[in-house]
Image (cartoon, rainbow, N blue to C red; front, side, top):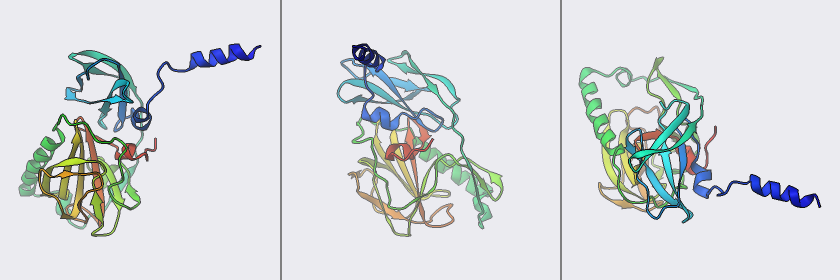
Length: 274
């Protein structure tokens, strides 16, 4: 007879709403990670902002609205809050995460301390890429469990503190995949090509808009195989692996940005390691 009270107590201990697949996959609330926030079961999608940037909102499992918030590497551990429909919304807790160091030696000193002329070029290119990251299209992402964009092992994880020739520079803002020159690079999910360039640091580069502020950047390509405005299906080839820009050898660097925050792409391919 004691079994019934024990079962009842176990049921009462369960959450009222079990987490959906997307929440389990993506909710990694650390600097450089993602926070998934329950917004309830209203009839219409709420409008959500974080740090004054619009946020991706989807209807999970057809039951409840959730906000999927990108957390910049600069996010402080502790309580944070989103804005919903112009008012203070749910709060959430950001944990801490430590990132390792990476030391790289470059023969081309200009890629460590650029000349004034190249600094002006870098500023122009940064502004162009920042505008692309800040685009927020109304389209819903076709999928939030992404494919790896290239076949090959991960060679450098997200968030590394980077030192070039002993001098500290910005943290590593994406994932590096080791792959041979000319290896096809594929769209990890459907998207529209919103920017193509050949940049000082990133080399030949393609930006894909997956929808609602979820943006992929692929750089150091040897060849670009798409045109501006082109719609790419999941698995569509966008270019080939190379070593253009600031690179010590052929590899793919993949950035993923959400509400203009560079986040760990490993989260979206099920490879996140705390």
